[in-house]
Image (cartoon, rainbow, N blue to C red; front, side, top):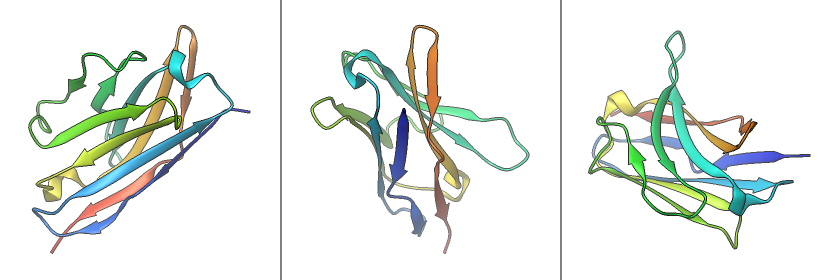
Length: 116
């Protein structure tokens, strides 16, 4: 069965960095467009970053442009989110998503907390 497993979250001080990873299994990873969303309890999920199956042009939320970088390694079935200059408002559960035509899968998420 398809699994997306995120890792790399944690507690970090403002201005710090984290690198999230999402390893996929049970699917042909290179076919899937990948994205990172984040969600705060009681709020709508927010698209943070997206990267197409080919690894070409990426997309970012305005709030993270210039601070976050999404990348993928199709040989490792993994998508990454490098997060720099973190702010308290980046605190959320971060989920990775895989999408290919009508198929969409989501991981369970990893908590990122930015606080002194």
